[in-house]
Length: 226
Image 1 (cartoon, rainbow, N blue to C red):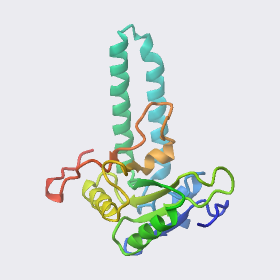
Image 2: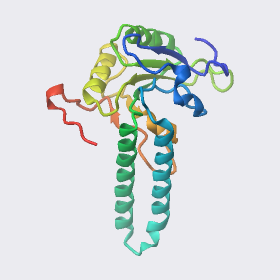
Image 3: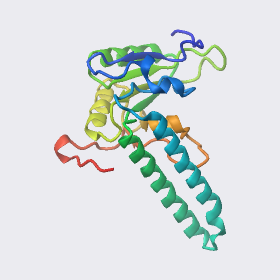
Image 4: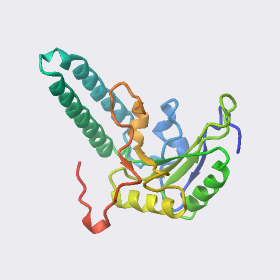
């Protein structure tokens, strides 16, 4: 596996069958640390989405700090916090969708001994239009523990398109890279990455919106909601 360098923080492959904005022209190139997220959709308003998302997180943060002073029972306080977290998540996803920041990814953490084999499977399947719009893998780190699990991301075009998301995870299961138990994997919309919503975030938000144990409905049963 290639060593991680400043100029190659990720090894990346795009699906040649799906047209997207060229990476060099994407607005994500101005978002330090997030230059290698999913290929952008034409007309994406990334700057607006990030600014609006951060404002919504600030409102959530204010609420979480102030609600203990409302004079309500602790159980009610926690319930109100969870309601506000859920609403903030929906608001952010809604903003991202109308702003065309719609990509998301299945995240596969694999053992360092398996990463080359797993990446070969993912890269070939992406190149042959069997998975999503792109995929990337973390190279061998120059510093830190070289035995640490490596992250492979498999991108889909729209975090609200459960048919496509389900199709991709089904193919990953067929490749032996995911299941609903020991190899459970999680799906994270790119907007969460742009806003810094990761595991253990200060707002207490879930860092993913789907997992591979879920049943994804067939096309005829899907109703899109915002």
